[in-house]
Image (cartoon, rainbow, N blue to C red):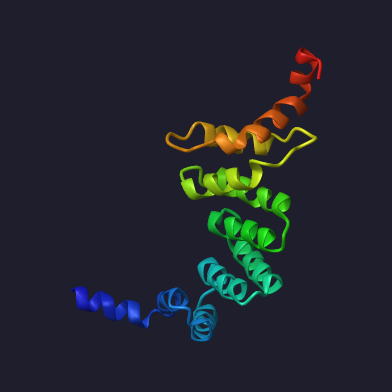
Length: 171
């Protein structure tokens, strides 16, 4: 039985491509993913192509593949998180926060998204209140064993930019 499962995995171009990506064999993996996409459009395949192109430094093409993945499934939290990383790679940490906020909303159980959100947003100052960012931060604060100490500036700027809070405390 185990041998039959292994043989099936070896024949699956998507599974093989993922293994090749982990090994750093991007050219062969790209071919395998193209084969997988030729028979079945898959957000997973597009997301893995994005990983390849990100590794090669082609963030524009990587973003295009993530757009394809998200067109197939707008709830693809892994594609959203990877889009955030592309923004960060381009030096735009502030823009990287948005995709992580969306990824947390889609999959609040994913601790890695929350950790990365806190890393990115922890030193950001917001001048306008944003419900989605506040929601992501609240989700982080409600997560046991998640160190939210980096979010002090974020928490402060969110509170002081919230209109009702400003009226009460005269900010």
